Length: 381
Image 1 (tube, rainbow, N blue to C red):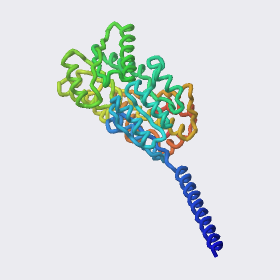
Image 2 (image 1 turned 90 degrees about the horizontal axis):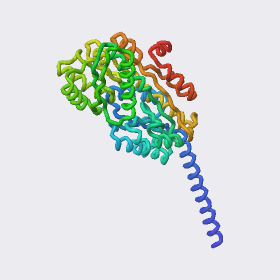
Image 3 (image 1 turned 90 degrees about the vertical axis):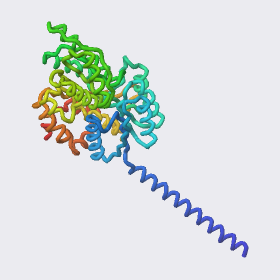
Image 4 (image 1 turned 60 degrees about the vertical axis):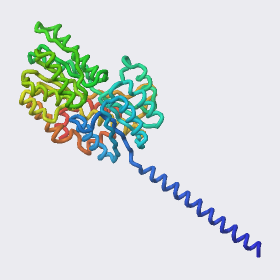
């Protein structure tokens, strides 16, 4: 009898073990299936997702995420260094597979890249690139990182030269400069371009032009306004103002200051980052010209990271992808009308085109990026 009881218990125990094992296997399979079906999640570290340029960036990224079934998470860091570095930590902790980031100073990228390396999160810059000459340590770290995919940026020196040339051709002589944050990598490149534009013009023309030292207006309309007022009060004879950028709000504040001081139409203003009411500003004399239309820049960074996560783009440990994005220049209401049709009223890429873009090789993605223009969108419509 005792032997029979022991035998029954042994069989029961064996059965329990078998059921337990089966449950674990089922749970494991379920976990695997959940992992396979898990959406890719890409974080966006941006100065602002609500100002003029930032909201345009968000609009195109959201459209790409929808087309590719990707989850997106935004962190607005205001180009404040500690917020820029902590944004990478926040997005990594939130389970992002990749991050695209618009940093302020190149030095911030040391912390960002280290965070991405530690968390195995792919990263790409937008509107920025780490300069090998100016920032050799950050460049070396980025080049050898298995998770730093690359950078998408504009030719900011050429942009600066072009804007100064536009002002000079309009007859302006004394140009003030309002930056956003001292030491910002992109501002420094634009400033180099402004100075180069002055140098080239003065070398070939008898009517010389002068560029004043920059004053910094932050990235809000209030600080942009107060800085512009201070510049004009200190230099009442200026006939032009370059507002270097900063997302758009700096310029909004500067234009308000100019109008309130009775200088609208008397001070020619050029800037980078298209305003929401640029057409009206061009008609009324508030703006002389603006470079912009580059809100698809972060879209290309998004595509780089997306394909790195998918395993489609190899991430080098001896360099990274470097993609140049073209600016559009608008200097009249007619120029703006053509831009508005294809970049404001509608996006320059639809869902099918975004899906096709995601399937391009990295080289073909560069080609597609370089050709983006009003004419390019017309040809696809």
